[in-house]
Image 1 (tube, one colour):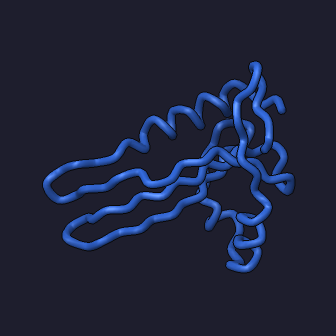
Image 2: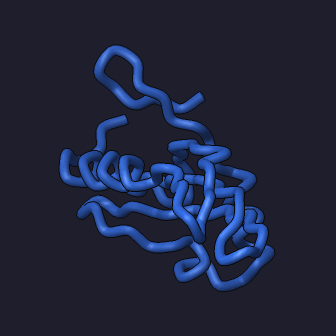
Length: 107
């Protein structure tokens, strides 16, 4: 699979921003991170990540899917697919991307 350079740069910059936080009011660890592809959106890269920990004294478990279009623009999947059942179907059909020999490939 070939994705535009600006899309890949945008994804990698976002991944770099997902660093865990260990501050007085916020202790968060990055529990899960996957780069995904869905055939229903062939020009997009999906970044799935989960934060766990606490913020302002409250436990958190945040699972997010962000979609990066060919221009490198990022949107939360909840803003793109409004219906919860359609979102679960979308999540189920995502496949993990991995880098091999200079190309991104699906598992």
